[in-house]
Amino acid sequence: MKRVFSGVQPTGNIHIGNYLGALRQFVELQNDNECIYCIVDMHSITLPQDPKELRKHTLDVAALYMAIGLDPKKSTIFVQSDVPGHAELSWVLTCNSYTGELSRMTQFKDKSKGRESAPTGLFSYPILMAADILLYDTDIVPVGRDQKQHIELCRDLAIRINNKYGQTFVVPDGRFLKEGARIMSLDEPMKKMSKSAENPLSRISLLDEEGKIKKAIMKATTDSEGIIKFDLENKPGVSNLMNIYSSFSGISVEDIEKKYEGCGYGDFKKDLVQVTSEALRPIRENFEQIRHSQELLNVLNEGAEKANAIAEKTMARVKETFGLGISKK
Ligand code: AMP
Ligand code: TRP
Image (cartoon, rainbow, N blue to C red; front, side, top):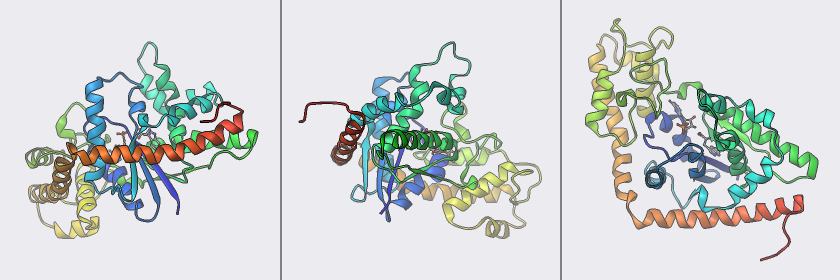
C-alpha cells in the first residue's frame, strides 16, 4: 500500500473548483492507499488571521472532509498544529535550503507582490509544506497543478539530505490533476474559480443553498450564439458550465452536446442547477450533522494521535541523521 498525504488550508469558501479539482480525488484514493489528510492551519498564519475565525474554519474544513466522504476508519484526518513534528522538521529543512531556491517560487512572488516587506513565513511556506510531506514517509501527494513547484522543492530537499547524510527521507511523487479539472469563474470564465474573488456569484461554495446555486448559474456568463457546444477557446463560459455538468453527472461532454442539441442556454442552465444542487445537497446535509458533533472532535483527536505516532518515529530518525538531541523520553 502506498502512503498518500495532502492538505488544505482552513480558509472559508471552499468551492466546487476545490472539490472537483482536488478534494474528490482524496476520497477516491482512500480505498487502495494509506491516506493522511491534514488541515494545514500553520500555513494559514503566513498571512494574518482572526484567531476565532481560524478555529472555525479549521473545524469547517475537517467537517467538509468528512461530509464529502472521507472515512476516518480508512483515512487519518488531523490538524497540522496538533502535531509538533511539522514545525520541528521544518527547521531542519530550513537549514538545508537556500534563499535562492525559495525566491524562485511563483506563489511567493504572487503573494508578496505589492507588499513593502513580505512576512518570513510566506517565504518559507514551501519548507513547511515539504516538512508536512516528508514527516509521513509519503509516496504520493495529490494536489492541483499550481502546487507542482512546491512538490519539486520538497523532492529536491529530500534528495539533497539523503545524498549528503545518508538515506533519511522517502522521495515523494506529486499526483497532479488533469487540466480538464480546472473549474473557471462563473462571471469571468477566463479566470480560475477562486475563494477570494469579490463577486460571490463567481463561485459556488460547497455549502451553498439551492437559491444561491440557482442565482449563480442563471447569471453565469455565456455568449450570444445559443448553441451548447464544448469549445474552450471560443466559448469559455458555456464550456465551463458543461465541464461542471459533466463532472457532477458523469455524463460525457459529447453526450451533453447531443442531449441539448437545439435547446437554448436557459433550459441547459436550469438542468445544471438541478444537477449541481443534487450533488451538493448530501454534502451540505452531512456537514450540518457533523460540524458541531462530538464525533468530529473525536476524529481529530484520534487523527492527531495516529499522525503523532508516525511523526515521532520520523523525527527520531532525523535527529539521529543530524546528531540532534541527547535525552531519551
Ligand atoms: P486553494 O484554494 O489554493 O487552497 O486550493 C486547494 C486545492 O484546490 C488545490 O489543490 C488547488 O489546486 C485546487 N483548486 C483551487 N482552485 C481550483 C479551481 N478553480 N479548479 C480546480 N482546482 C482548484
Ligand atoms: N500549499 C497547499 C495549497 O495551497 C496546501 C498544503 C500545505 C499541502 N501542505 C501540504 C498540500 C502538503 C499537499 C501536501 O493547496
